[in-house]
Length: 86
Image 1 (spheres, rainbow, N blue to C red):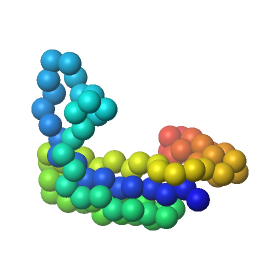
Image 2: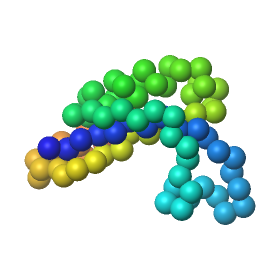
Image 3: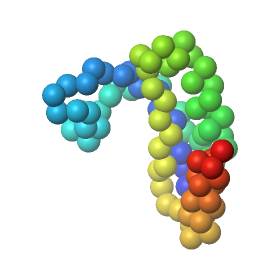
Image 4: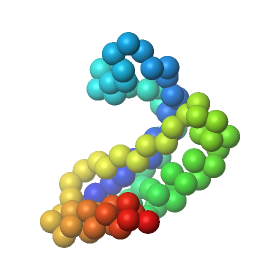
């Protein structure tokens, strides 16, 4: 089963080397787990309505955690392609 994390982070200023999340990740404000993509998208949508996110001081990230089943990979890929077409 694939799990998702919805993370609300502070946006830090851009430095000389750019932003590298692996070496210096942004400070996390809130982390919420979701069992499916629809739930994660709904939580992310709620976070995106916050004033600090709308003002550009915080950012919302949806991260995939865990394993994917072979059929689920195809579904996630087709869902993301459909989203880009809109």
